[in-house]
Image 1 (cartoon, helix red, strand yellow):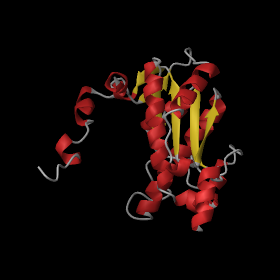
Image 2: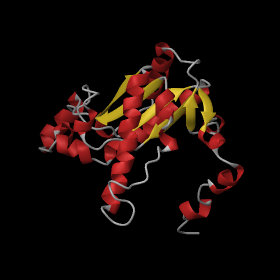
Image 3: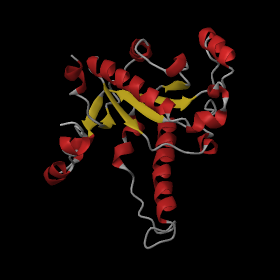
Amino acid sequence: MIQDSLKNKKHVWHYDTNIVPNESEIEDIVRESYKFGQSKQKAFAYEIFILGPDSERSQRLMNLCDGNRIQVDIDAYGNKGENTHSNIKRRINDGLVHLLTAPWTLVITPRLTEPNPYIAKLWKESDSYWQHLDPDFCERNRQIPLEVGLLVNTITGITLDKGLDISYTLCVPKKIEDMEDFPYLTFTPILIVTIGKAKKYYYERLTEEEALEYTKPEFEEIFKFVDR
């Protein structure tokens, strides 16, 4: 059952660098996941770059993601109060540390794509505009992140079924110019996913008091039965 897999999902703090899944294991996970992938008009207007173990590259990626978090704070606060560009409190986001030790990293971005023959025929007959060849549309399209989320949830289940761990980050650079160390990227990432075997989970670094405070909202705050 899906619950048996997903109940083991925990955010990773550090991966075990002595237990590294091989490339064929990762390929098995993503190939199996893709069988269950869904996309409007079968566009699959995203691509996934699978990066293997490389500590220097992982450090650069971590720096980019953590730098984006600081930039978000600067954009929000401007020059108000203590949070100025020069005085902003510099503390690495512990939630991003999994990027440093991850043996496998999936960088997911939009992609430009032609329609398949069936959809191309329908679009021609209806004189519709195929948006997935428009770079501006791909950058702002809300459909693509949703489809990526559906696929990554499947990747998560299969990864956990294999006894491995998986974590994600949305703290990604917003300008493609910042990704010069990753020249194969045409668009900025939608999501970054890491896979490996956890050595320590995020919650295990919390004190007992912090663990009590680190909770999700109550069920009723999220789910609203309108007709009840």
